[in-house]
Every structure is written in C-alpha cells, then in structure tokens.
Length: 372
Image (cartoon, rainbow, N blue to C red; front, side):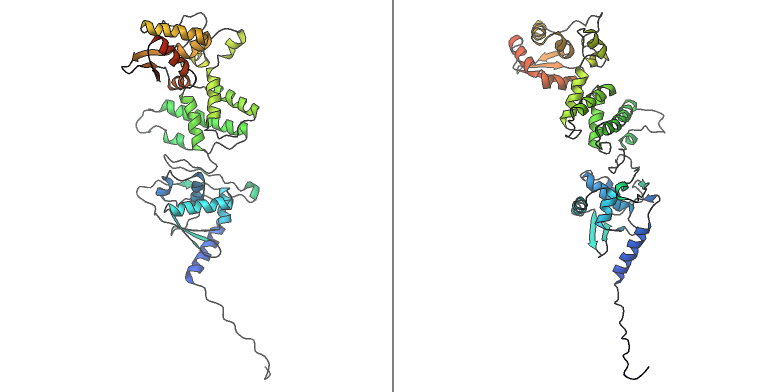
C-alpha cells in the first residue's frame, strides 16, 4: 500500500449486554415455534383467580403458551393481540391488570416485552394445563383453537366452557350423583351453540351465558321453549343486550307460560305449557281430568275465588291454582308455597300486587310472601 493512502478505519462492533442477547435469542426461539402442541406454563394462582376479566384470561393463556422454562415470555403486544384476537389497547389494559394483581412483571427489551410470571407452578399440586394450538397464517384466520383441560376452571379463548367436565361423576365411585345436573349442562352447551349460530353472536365461550341457559333448564323450561323464544328474538332483531340480561330470560319465561300448541290450535282453555309437561304438578288439569281440590282455611278459598274472577280462568289455572296455603304470620303476612322456583319468581313478578289486594280484603293480611 502506498504511503499516504487512506487506511480503512476499524470500527469496533458495539458490545451487547448479556440480558439483551438472552432476550433476543429467546424472542427468536419463540418466533420459530409456529405450530404443534405446547404445554402452558401459566401458574395455578392465575387460573384460579376468578376476579380476572375475560380479556385478562385470554392474554394470560397466550402468555402461558409462550413462556419458556425460566418463566418468561418474549412477545410483542401486537403479537399477543393477534393471537388472542383482541385489540392492542385491550391487550395493554389486560397486561396492566395482570401486573397490578401481582401475576406478571413486564420489562421492555426493545424488540419485545419481557413478561415474567411472579408465581411459580406448584409441581406437586397444580393441575396440568395442556393446549392444542393451531397457528393461522392470515389475519382473517388469526383466531386459535384452544382446548384447556383444567378441572373446575373454564377456558375463555374461543372454546366451549369446561363446566360439564367439572360435573362429571367420579369413575372410581361407580355412582352418578349429578346425572340430572350433567344432562342440563350438556343441553345448555348444545343450546348455547345453536343460539350463537342463530343470532350470529359468539356467546358460547362465555360462562355467564352458559349459566343463564342452564338456569332456564333448571327452572323447568324445555329446549323447544328456549329455541322458540330465541326465534322470536331473532325475528324482532332484538339481540343487542347480552344473553345474561333479562330480555331473553323474559322471552323464555313468557314462552314457557304459553299453553301447548295443540291446545292453542283447538281453541281449548288449557293450563300452561309447564303444567302440561308435568313440571307444575298441581296446575290446571288437562281436558277430561279434574284438578285437585284446594286445601286451606275458608278465607284462602274465598281469596282464590276472588282472584279467579278478577284474573280469568286461564291465568288463574296456570299460576294461582298451584299455590298452596302455608300460614298467616303474627305480623299479618300471608305465606304461600309455589311448586318450583320458576313459578314463585313468575308469580312475584307479575301477580304479587293482585295477591296483596285480595289478601287485604279476605285474609286481613298486609303482605304476601311466595316461597318455593
């Protein structure tokens, strides 16, 4: 090289801290895991924290699936939002909520967030949580299919609730103590899938919606009555309120109180649909049969006669006739017993005022209490 020629200066490569190098390698390793089954490393304390919102559970499940052996996760907020099918702002609020509750600690590494679980898994007592994850390549198909096996805790990310698994019988006992409860839960799951499809609203991942549908079945409504009520709601295009709000419940109760279609077609005066199906055993008897004679003091019989005249035969036979006289307390409260909780709730909601007026005239009672 000739003298005076410019020599190329050697520029040393800046050193990178070991923590950042570890974060980058962990991030790249996480990015390479595109498919296949993974085991969630979400701590048991998070899974059993029922104060978490649905968005927090979704974010916690995604973070748990991408947590390494040291209990840390390196994902961008945009990546978490894509995998959880949430907006980035919702993911930020959910992460802040998890941090405030002491479940997560987060630190920015430049390329991604370093999320670290604050509680370690209890290897001896914590149930195993296994997710089957199918990665989707496009934004339109970015929702993931999760199956979460955790006794007593339901998955909130695009999957059916596992409440039915919690009600399953013990295989070692040889008994099935919760047969009716499990049957109603399975029926509620089937109905919730149908409701989501019919209304075009994704309700089937929400445990509150499942609990409401299960309550309809527990109170005596049939699947046919629920389907009929939802069809009426779909026809009116009124399904903006959430499923667990009273609008749909009122429709189901109204549908359950209607007489059977065969009676309506023949124009017969008939008991309610619940009475005809045997749920209300003492409701008005079908055609050709006599209803059981009422039991109680003369004042109660006179009150029944007054209510029958004021309400009409159909309403009286469906809701007042099944009520049984219990007693009149010292403070002037008339106590009546309904054959079911659903029946008692309906009478209190729709006929309590009429019962109070009749009781004041015939029983000298100041109040009426209907129990189930």
